[in-house]
Amino acid sequence: MTVLDRKRWLKRLCSGGALAVAGLALSGCLAFAPGPKETPRPTPRPVKPVYTPSVQAQTLVKYYGDLEQDLLTRGLLRTDGGGPETPYDAEDLAERFETLAFYDEYAVALDGGAGGLGRWQQPVRLEPIFGPSVSPAQAAQDRATLTQYAARLSRITGHPITVGSSGNFTVLFAGVDDADFVEARVRRLLPNLSNRDLALFATPPRKFYCLVFAGGPQRDPLNYTRGVALIRSEQPDLMRESCIHEEIAQGLGLRNDSPRARPSIFNDDDEFARLTSHDEKLLQILYDPRLRVGMSAEDARPIVSRIAREVMGDLAL
Image 1 (spheres, one colour):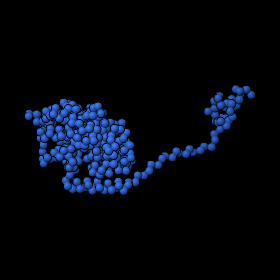
Image 2: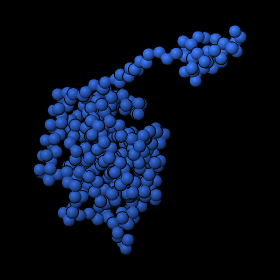
Image 3: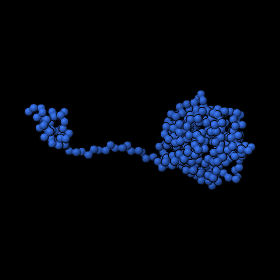
Image 4: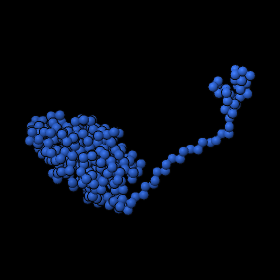
């Protein structure tokens, strides 16, 4: 039997052989005969461990829940933005802007407490990161709040502010049980951060509901290129939202708090939970193109005074 005849014979014998090709002609029909089919076993997916809050985490949840209720009972964490009892004029606004934009709440900020004007010149890309202890439902809610707030800030400032991945302003939502996760992430994002400040992120004192570091490279620290905020996830909804509003706005350049700022979230008395119209005007001033990164308070003062009158509608003055 010639090789050609053997190919034809194999093709006829293996009539189920639509798959038969010349290269298999030298092997027997076993190559084509269907064997018993075995149901492939699915590859088992790794089981994600169920998170069980530690006693410390449960204690913090109760503490912050009780604290929010106490603040609300005392008329704090207001969401009305202020009213007739919280008047201010252009002079007040300019004075408060100088206090909030040219002085630092904490000396540990990345700009080193420099007295110049600091803000972002490049677009701000907020990236929410959630610790392992944060539930999917809470993560979805916080992401939605952050996205809505970013759009509002962008409209107010006229500066591009969005939410997405690979951001330059990381917003960490994490709890006390996520300390190792937070430490590793912040160490990667802020490699020059001191051990003391790194510990402040990983294991903040209970009185720190949230915090933010923002600034630029060592050669140009007031030209912001990196921000990292921590929002403690044990807090109830309104307190977490309040933290989002304050820390992101401070990370844009209004880096201080003042008891004279009212109605405002830039005040340690917790009177207001959300950005007010007063605070919107401060952000408008901060991102006005007539101001420059690095300006001193003295150089900026006459310009700020003019802008404050404009945003207050006092153009005749």
